[in-house]
Length: 452
Image 1: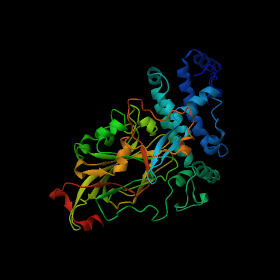
Image 2: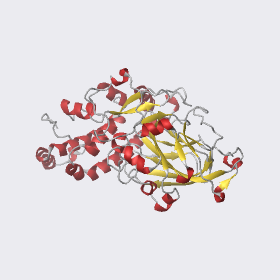
Image 3: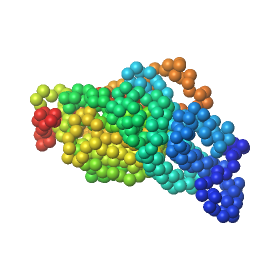
Image 4: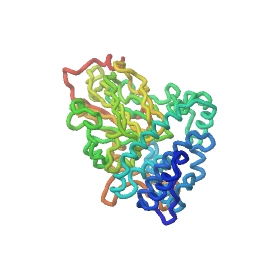
């Protein structure tokens, strides 16, 4: 923190505390290390971000436009460093054009990043449980706020559409007045046919599960090399079961679908399948932003998540039209994140979903789906997605886009010796890969059943 340190933040319970308590807090503030106090300020900032989301006058769009809504907590120099330079945003490639675009990180995600990574390890360790509890409590509270009905809902939705420039042309209910709560809008449905799946009758084709930023990897080892740096990012940890993980073989492939706040927040089935099970695993509420995932923090395996096992109908693309298909497990892991406290499902266990069907939804915030295909499925991801995910393809830079990035902004986490992939913007239903399963006579069925 700079020398122009702000004074101790006044907490909500301050008025009910005896004078000696307030005085002791003042003394601690003066003798504690600046980095410790900074983390206290960041925790207060997170609470303020959620508090003000309930205020119809002070909304997210107004805060972004003002570029200074936290200056009562941070001096100008510190504010500029934390919220204009560090953890500013991420590069993505627009698949349709090949252009390398830049997306700013939402302010709450920037606060969450600093709560996780600001200051020496020793200081972070001292407040780690406080941070975990804060992120959880504020995520749950944010969901409660956005489940509220009332006259402010319409303005909140209109502001959100304006802030993120959301295209409403494909939305089933276009009028903000048609939603009772903000979360109902956030998990909005699209018009029928708005996201048609590629090759709907070809069970060898895998499609995107969401409007998202996508990475694909042939196995977990490659994923850890180029993207997910958490040491516990293994299939047993992700699924919460060693026994279940064994069904996927020694080298399962995976796709990581990251949804940002501006995205359509329903997810769809990448394959035709029957739902075998849905299991909720409790956990934390860390941000799933790439700048957290690219750090040695176990985000995906630590966060609260739902594990859905799909018994998928997969065929070999070289097979004759009437050849049987293979029934194999596919894990569809819906991972909650910072300020995302709820995951919903459109189908029940035992029901069948067709490729491209609306499978479920996330409530407010960014979130992620990790989809795992067994080794036996023999998946080959599309070449452009594979090259981007391993950093071989970086997209085409456009001067107008690069000029929008502040000169001092720190983008990403890679050092000079690291190679990281880059996410690709895709839409629900786009072809992303093909499977060519090795046929096992004991687990084959007829094509008619796969397309029922």
